[in-house]
Image (cartoon, rainbow over all chains, first blue to last red; front, side, top):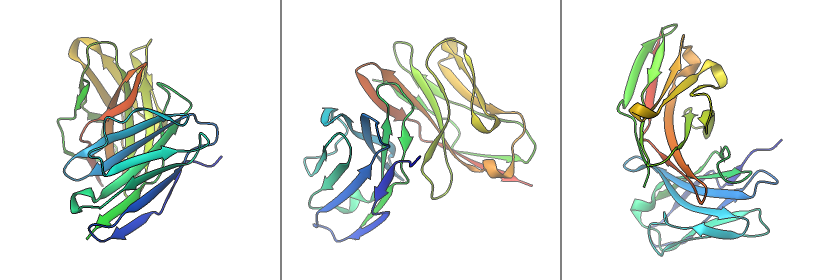
Length: 113
Length: 114
């Protein structure tokens, strides 16, 4: 079956612009996660959804970052007023639920000029 | 809070040689442990996982890992590496119920020489 998909695969934006990153999880997966992978920080957890609720937002680095999930499926990560330090690969993962294997998407590479 | 240490940033091995990648974790209770592999330009793929039970776990692509509670380790092994194993390997720990996020190590980049 189809895996986790993310769009766009690459995004180049100017400092100060807003960006939206999309994640389509595997059908039927109730849990969805966002991570960020950057050279200086490695792989960092951002936010976790169970259904449409986000019980853990502890990894969001600032109030410029927000995420939502609708219909227990698609999720959007929004970064407002982007900064150069936001440049990274943003990875989405989904799973059947707690402690299960997380399936990762290919990521969105964000470059902020 | 949980943490993971992968002491080796980069390892080079000859094709056909054995491999061991080190992973140490910090967590107060029994952790959930994972090894993922990331090939260039690709997403993360799960190699194996440990939740409970037998401390030696088998994964895909001929990999195995052993959970050693006394050493807080979960080292990844392969008896004979193939050129296609060249990639970045990440160890991760999850705290389980009520805290489903994964905490990753910084990764070990594996280079295979002919």
